[in-house]
Length: 236
Ligand code: C5P
Image (cartoon, rainbow, N blue to C red; front, side, top):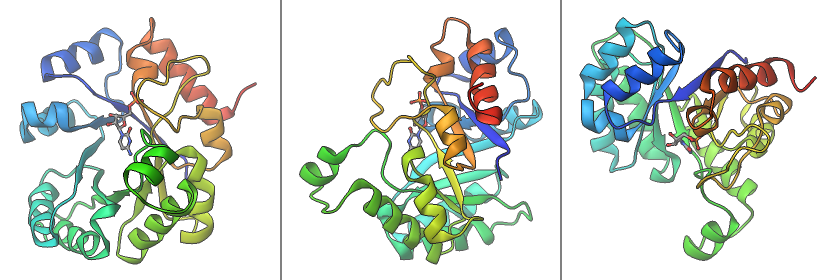
């Protein structure tokens, strides 16, 4: 399954996001909405995007006690987005209840539940020294993916580097959503585990999340098309 690439709408307001979409002719492409924009604009933003024919990945990364997450997901279900996420570090019970909440909303629309493993902005130092988690990055990411899979998640957010091993353990239909995507020579910014779209293709990632490599490019439209071309066909 390799069918989608979500553009991260990391803007402060709907007005800014909409101007960016219109100016660079990104009408109707799949988009990812994160905390910055959602906390400003609220659920109406999702309505606006859907009216403009955008598929939406709602990236709110819930992480709380299982009951709170379950109830929040019940409300999120009514927004009828493609995907929503939780932190896998919230544990198996929280993931299970998140899925229960999504399924118990009044909508018949299916929203995929995705669990964030270890953020792509973290490296071995953050993992081993700050969080005091033993083992390699890959081992930790794969273990969290396995927990997510066993508790009803449809897939995980991970880096491109871990996508293949996750499929080996969780099965090929378990989705891998990969941020930290950079065109060759792009700035990594705060991301540590970055990869090119071509490597994402090679490692069988299902979905790309693409942000600053496009939004900060001098020509966002051509950067987007370049990512899409590498993602679909590799580097020629
Ligand atoms: O600009 P860049 O491509 O680094 O943006 C990545 C986007 O993906 C950001 O919106 C960030 O919040 C999001 N994200 C991430 N790592 C995750 C989940 C989401 O970078 N594990």
